[in-house]
Image (cartoon, rainbow, N blue to C red):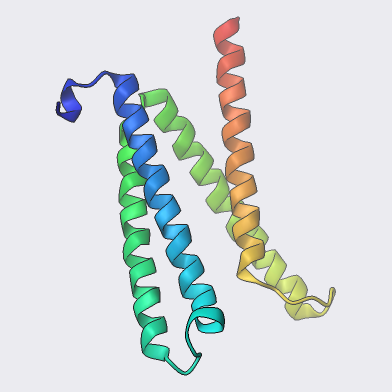
Length: 143
């Protein structure tokens, strides 16, 4: 059975499962690329690290493609919510990331900036925005 013969709900479920598989694969390859030189192979083996990073990037591109397919499979309202959440996340991340960098470089606070802090901020912003926007949509639908 082709994608076009499936119902909207079935296609959405398949697209979401596909995205989950690629996201899981990306996380696994990221962990291997990150921790491999410390626990799986000697740090001096840079060729192995380059291969692991290359595989991670390739799987990451596939995850992005799966995300695009999943979003295109949504209805117009859900696509709009996704777009707004992504836009808010991008804007907040640029503002927060630059402010974070300036605070650190100016010596106001003494801490080590780390990309993981920005990734956590982005994830929480995106998740919170999706929850709030979906709640608003549901509240408006009940009226």
